[in-house]
Structures are given as C-alpha cells and as structure tokens.
Image (cartoon, helix red, strand yellow):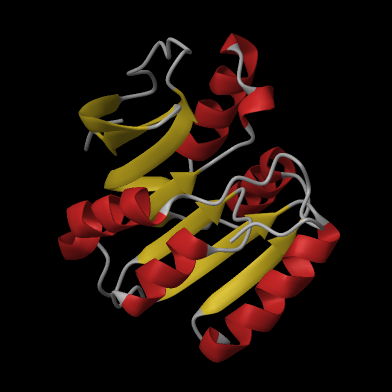
Length: 174
C-alpha cells in the first residue's frame, strides 16, 4: 500500500500483477538468488522469499523507504540484503563483487523511461544474470522497448493497467 509520505514515483506492484508474476516464476524461485531493483516496499522480493528463494538483494534509492524495507527484511535477515542508493550504481557494485542472480526484477519509476535509460538498465543488469536467468522488467506500456538485446530473449509479457511486465531469458551462450 502506498502512503501519503511515500515518494511520488513509488508505485507498488498491484496484487493481481504480483500474483501473476509469482505464479509464472514459482518453479524458478526455490533456492535461487534474486535481485529486486527499485524495490520500494519489497513486495516482489518478499514474495520470492516466501516462495523459497535462497537470498534476495533489494536495491532502493529513497532512504526512508529503504529504512522501512530494512525493518521488514529483518524477518528474513539471513536470506536478504538491502542496498540503499541508485540502482545503476548498485548494479555496477554487485557486478564488481562478482554477484550473479537467477532472477532479476526491475520496476523503475515510469518517469525515468526513455531509450537511453532502457539501454543503461539492461546493460547494467545483463552482467548480473546467470545463464538462463530470468529478467523481469515493468515499464509503461506506452513505451516501445527495443528488446531483445544482450542475448536476452523474450519469454512472455503481460499487461496490467498502464504497465507491461516483460519476461526475458538470458541465452546460455551470452
């Protein structure tokens, strides 16, 4: 739920969309490493933990929202890490640390979306994806996303209101 104190660009994924995502990814979550970018309140990451993910890294820029996220993550303290700051910075840091993930979910503020941002986001995430990893991105359906790129192949997409959820799979040889 969004409160009046939340940043204006915080748009939690709807219950219907979250159920759809978790139903689609259910076989791919147990014992997997998950990255939740632009986490907000962490609904996707917490759902992944409930489905048996081994570990979830959350990345949230807004300090107050991240503080609330850290409190909520206490329940999963051995299986979650909350990173506070810019997503593009943290994707570079995680890459430098040699981290890779089986599932990455990105739900950036819609105001950020343009061709340059899409390129930076996908190129930043690509190196964090294990072979055959799933990259799920939520973006404004009015935007034409020129994918696949970087060896990512479209698996499926779903429309929910003003947004589209695009499921991409990293090809084994990329």
